[in-house]
Amino acid sequence: QVQLVESGGGLVQAGGSLRLSCAASGRTFSGVVMAWFRQAPGKEREFVAGISRSGLSRGYADSVKGRFAISRDNAKNTVYMQMNSLKPEDTAVYHCASKYRLEYNSVRQEYNYWGQGTQVTVSS
Image 1: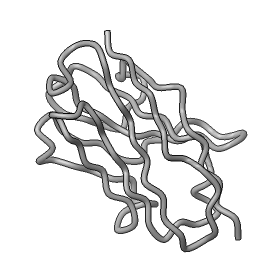
Image 2 (image 1 turned 180 degrees about the vertical axis):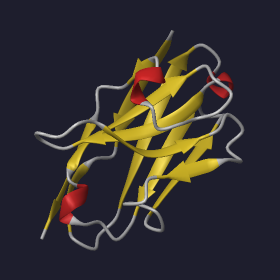
Image 3 (image 1 turned 90 degrees about the vertical axis):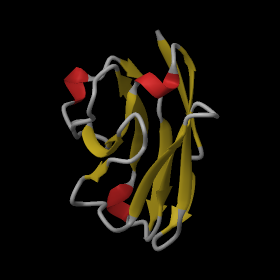
Image 4 (image 1 turned 135 degrees about the horizontal axis):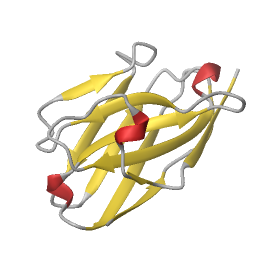
């Protein structure tokens, strides 16, 4: 079992920045790949970014590429997402997720563990 708790969401103006954190507890954190997904009202949950177990491999959705950066600190059992140049369309509940696989991907059904989410609201 892996328990995930997100933090760092909030209200920000367009063009601003936020840093999300996801603290993990339970089984060995370095053994799971991590990802961030988001879900806006009335929309399906979508992949935002993923990171390998070592942190050396990372990937992003096209909509956030160049603006968001995912990272992890295995010593602190925490994954982060730095979000810059935020846009109103980034407004959503952001969830971190994990799975015991070699590589991350964008298939949400493959992720076994989820956090409860943190709200990000970007005003225009």
